[in-house]
Image 1 (tube, rainbow, N blue to C red):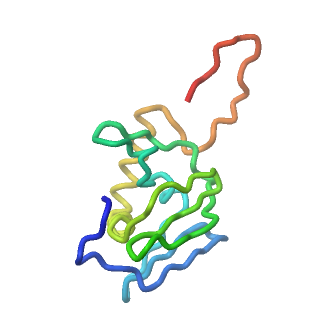
Image 2: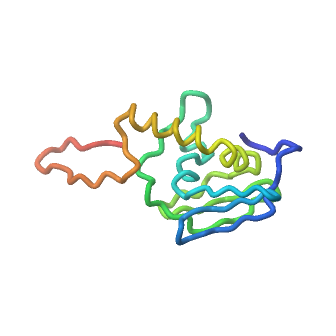
Image 3: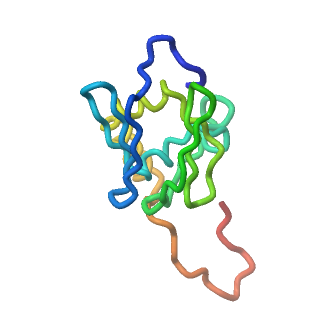
Length: 138
């Protein structure tokens, strides 16, 4: 995922749509709209992806995350700054193109994993029961 393949297209349009909560990427006459939650869930950061296969951490509770800023990272990537404080993943051109082109199958797999783990796209707002010193750990 890191780096940039020499034939990876670079978007000629990068447009942040705050109201509809999508990042638009344009490649010539082809345009892709990636919503903020999707981008946050597929962060390339080591915190979420781990340092090797099988070390991934499923990203949950990101339905309402906002994309606050987009910053260039050299000539090969974008740094996305999210409202949950996450800003450590560099989205290379090849990763962004892959996320755009394979959106439907990646999103379907993410939803399948959420269901399999009994997790939610929403933040857990269930009040913690009082009286017990044992709490839920993340």
